[in-house]
Amino acid sequence: VAVTCIVPMEDARAWIAYADGGIVEMRALTPSQKRDQETAAHRTVNAHGRIVDGDNHEGKADKEIDGDEFKVTRRIFTVTKTSARSPLADGTSRKHVKTAVASMLLSNGIVFVACEQDSALEVWDAKTATCVRVEDACDLGAIVSLVQHPTVTDLILSVHVTGAIQIW
Image (cartoon, rainbow, N blue to C red; front, side):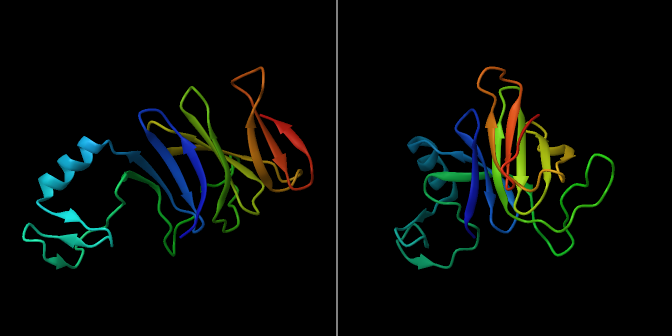
């Protein structure tokens, strides 16, 4: 599944949004963390992504392998047949939206997420990984980009498919 957005966080972490609508938090591993993880499991991963036991025999992977350098630390939003994005602040349901196309993190731990072909801005608490509010921007069209205000750091600007710009 393609990655559509990356939100860098502190402590070598990032929120990664996927084309199917899922969001995960990943952490970069240092070389010593990688070695510790491999030693603890008594297995290593070869260049082809296959698990190799101590005798160097290749076996089937019995767990998800996140990669050599990164580890999924928590799943923020998982897409299922019944999953839905959070409703608008007034309780109105949103149409089925998937791909996050724009996102950003403010220094106060708030993550903003805008989804493809959706006129809403999701506000997430990075510490608890919960969507705390969804604001409607339907009169301006879908959000295509988010930028932090250049001089007032607790404000963001949303750029819309119609060419409109809104300050939040």
